[in-house]
Image (cartoon, rainbow, N blue to C red; front, top):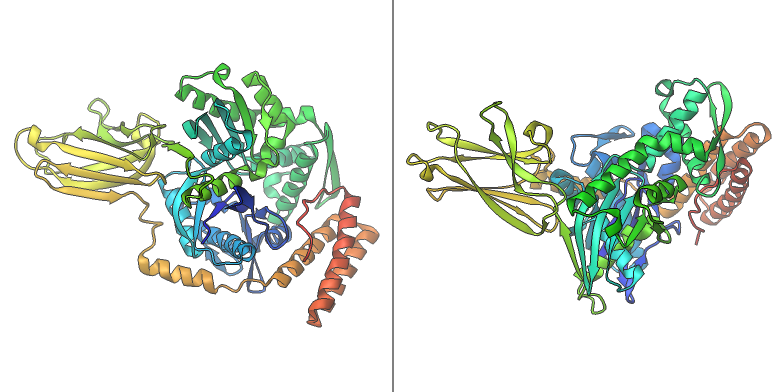
Length: 569
């Protein structure tokens, strides 16, 4: 039974499998390998991917997106009259990817490897695995996105020994890794990243620039108007991957407005984001005492790297022309699929060794006598090769203490209050000499980035804790209930999803068009709805194809370069 690889992305998700000596991307029911990470509710039914993305433009209150950014937090998003956690929404995406994989492979799928940003903390990793369980998948292994990208790049670039820098700039996150390749070994030397820096940030800056130029208060716009404005900004950004200037148009409360955006405008608008990217790259290089001259190749992956301003800025501070792989959106997914082949012990790839590292420093808080504050005492420092285990010895502050609280933190700051608190372990301190009051703390960080902490005193007593957020961790009973809930949600059929996609496209076009074009959109949308009421599948498919062709013509007329979602089969 095949193991699938899943790139669970902020804006798009992909699924892959190892076949015939290489990783293969699995198309979704619309014929595209990219499934938008969007979930929507329509008439009591759940739709995922392209239809949900279209509905989000006109019904943002009934859709959810960007929920990957809230993984590990006590956040919820509404779908209709129900609220869902980020891991439940992610489970809906994973469930759809699993269905697409089963349809492609012609057999059940039970296990997946899922990629996560290198800078995902322990809580975020835990709930990602939990999302897999909710979707009916066994997830024994998580792989860091830059590690997956490095694995794919190695497969694409051959067996030459080299040190390269992978800059993975996606829709929602930025990951940077320094990678050394030799023989059959791919060794990750250092990683750095930002879970809140991606293509979405560029869209927001373009949208706000548009508002400033037209004296519009962005924050006062209705959610639907903001979504349409961000959509226009995204389309403008995509047009500028091939042109030196692009026209951004948006219809708001005061009518249609336009703005020419030039390459110089993009540099100025993007300057703070580009500077953040540069700092992240230099941090990764500093961690391994390297400079740009030590790097053989700079490899760009992720859709945001298509932006010329990104490539130009990297060329500026690295002093070399970066290499962008073909179809940068797909690289991480290909890497995860490759790792699935390694885990299956496929003969043609089983000898490849991929090492990974701990992206954060992990330690405990110790009392600083001068300030009275807790300062970070590292037990495992960032960039240690995984799996890794290390122990340190500590003593109580006071001779009268009978117990100590071992407080566990993640982060690089000296003072613990600036780091992420992961949890604590309480352990007794026996009476006696100072040596007898010693507490030994061992940290074990596994290949999936899950931390286990053990504290032991000199009396032989031990306390152990798997570090997860108790507020987001479900009990076995609750987990079983949620699994059934996700499974029993009413999901749209294939035909219903196509119909929803085309109708939502029509609603969006109606808002974007004027005059006769708007009347054409309304007439065709109403006609399709009428045919659908007849419940004749063949007639509905024929009508839908005809309406799609008309909508495609109108989008071309409007200058909207929509992504192709595939052809009906």
